[in-house]
Amino acid sequence: MKSNNTNAMGLDVGTSRIVTARPEGDGYHFNSQLNAFVTIPYSKLTERVLEKEGVPHSVNGAQIVVHGNESEKFADLMDTEIRRPMTGGVLDAKEPESISMMREIISSLLDKKSTDKPLVCFTVPAASLDASESLTYHEATVKQILTQLGYENRAVNEGLAVVYAELESTNYTGIGISCGGGLCNVCYSYLSVPVFTFSIPKAGDYIDANAASMTGERANRIRIAKEEAFHFNGFFSDKVQQVISVYYDDMIKSLVAGMKEAFGDARHMPKLNRPVPLVLSGGTAMPTGFRDRFEKIFNESHLPIQVSEVRMASNPLETAAKGALVAALAEM
Image 1 (tube, rainbow, N blue to C red):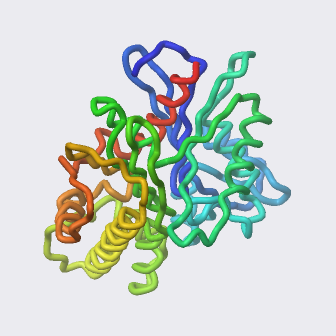
Image 2: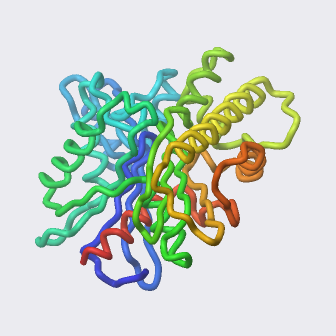
């Protein structure tokens, strides 16, 4: 589904990254920022240099708050952890700067220039299987931020956004999985209708935090090591990589176990006469060998549904944002 309508945008509000998607010619244009920030001591010289370099920041009294991609570099230089507006897939109510930082990062990505009110579809997570945490506060706050910035807005389930982005050829029938930083989101869709959705809390941050605890490294450095060098199907002489592999396996097994539970409990599963595709996306699904490892564990679990293929999304980091854009274009 393509359109030249520049008043539609997709926004993936992830724990680790915030990603935008816009129509561009016959394709799409994406932009992203790390959903994080770090504070550094204020000085006029530092502020001037950051402005000259185009580093996103704001001033808060005696501190400069660097947000987005550059926060990671400053945190590493200062040997401190980055701070995150979100945790576990939703806004962190314990972080006093969560709303203001989310507003800053979203505003810098959307970069509203027109005087009309563009439509933004933004992703929201599904409830966890145990439904222990309400998603109302998170969704309402993101809607409020977008409304204050001058955007019409709609929420779309993150797993369903994966289906919208990748499964047009099957009329949006299949399974979309988004493995992010805070959650793994799953959606089983039939003809674009979400039959069921759920999330599990074991995702990228779970791997980072537990690997950091086992190795004595900071979670931020574990995340960088994971994103830059980790792969499956190999022998790890490096302890950090070995520990990451253990928690990755645990995450995948928990994800498949959650799918088995959800599929088993779904009373109104459509009875299809053909297998459905399953698409994997998200930054946590990107290491080489992830798809093969997931498929092996999936096949060994004998879930009560036939799957025609297990494949990676074409651009895993941008899939949910693209699906949100598809949803927005459908509303125009």
